[in-house]
Image 1 (cartoon, rainbow, N blue to C red):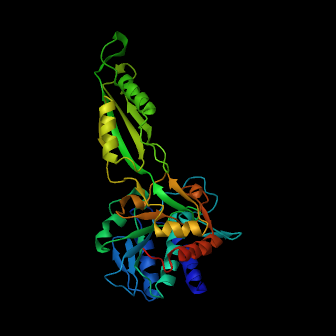
Image 2: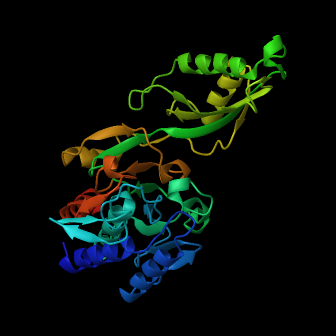
Image 3: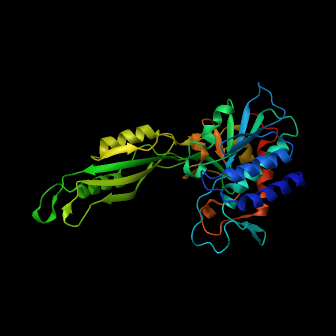
Length: 352
């Protein structure tokens, strides 16, 4: 491994962590990425806050691999004991917002790109540092896919401990409303929408879809918000609640939506159908190479940019998902080195 590339990436991560880069507010960190790439001799493309580069040995007849991770972060939790933008280093770890999720993946994939493109590969490479992943935003990687052409494989960087997430649950958020009839609480009037909503919520809690994935398990439906009532003595005529639905690869979001609408009385409106489950076959050459290297594979319950990248993909990156979105988030610098090494072992001279 070229130590210059690794040192460049670690320095870049320190600078990234020091810049607030909330979703939709990534322009300064995107400026940094673009400026760094130019300084290293690349000609970056940019649209909005997404920045990408292509391998110099591009050949139209070769398949293309996309290396993608995101530069945006959630808001810092209140319990930070360090400055979330301080890029503090303690005992070999870098502490700061976005260090683990997913700055370490961004800079590790970039270092891997720089190594891989030094020699001829059987594929083209695109590295993309994308925006708005934390909110599944329309101005993130999905907005620039049209510039990439056909992608044959995507490696999505997220903190997985450099183990392979070979499947990922989809996400669908449903806004539901039970409707009743208002009346005076003292006179037994009206139809209480809260009671109707409670019945539907209980139905959803017990709803078990028959197709269970070996990798991702069952479809999971969780009611996470509820709102009703205007004052204590009025029977509410509306009760609204939100359901978080995590789908496996055996159902599309549309299929699960149809099942739910046919099962409960409340009106159900999906916010989006676009975040479907994703997976990569276990016999794919990348997965088989990973298995031969001793990497484990699993199904991920969390959603990433995999959901909007319409090709075969695997999620893998340095860090630990349990540190994401927590106070005093951190990454061990040695995890970045090891992450680059594993990316190279997986991708160098890979045949797809």
